[in-house]
Amino acid sequence: MRWTSDQWKFLLSSLFNIVFSLLWTRQIMSSCLCRCLYNELGIQMLSVQPDTKPKGCAGCNRKIKDRYLLKALDKYWHEDCLKCACCDCRLGEVGSTLYTKANLILCRRDYLRLFGVTGNCAACSKLIPAFEMVMRAKDNVYHLDCFACQLCNQRFCVGDKFFLKNNMILCQTDYEEGLMKEGYAPQVR
Image 1 (tube, rainbow, N blue to C red):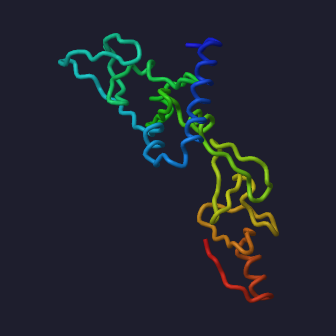
Image 2: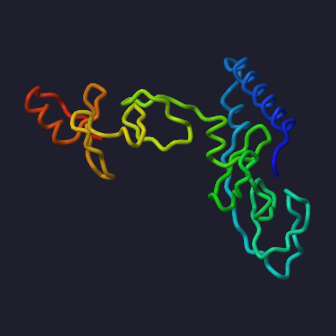
Image 3: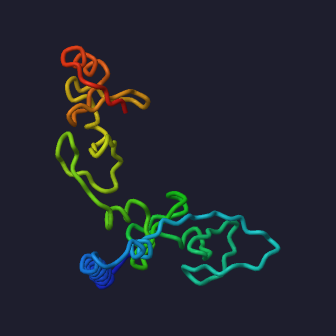
């Protein structure tokens, strides 16, 4: 299903109204408002038992006669009917979670693209999109490609030790050389 321009306008105006109302009432609203507007929910794939009455699909309102069905949002769905409102990907194939906000059902990528928080990489200062995988060290966030020793550019593998000195990521060799020269205390991560 492709969205018409009127549907996109409605979506964008709805999102604007939500963001505006959240910003306007931010000081007096509690965090439960955010929990009401955003949910990360699970998707279950169930096998249809032949002796049970067919369930109705929440997406198309037809009976589910397939071998498998999806259960999400306390409703039953055909595998083809539970889709992201933005990219039309089949949510049962993408993973076991979906996101809801502003009466939209979204995949993780589109939820983060529309509502996620972006930031800048501590190494290169370029923007990190909200849906991109990152590495973190204390309050710093890095692109995966930027997460390397800032003296010798050695990339880290899973399980490698790295050290944080004056907000610089250092490999063990460079850290120990600096330790011998300056005598500073370690912050192992």
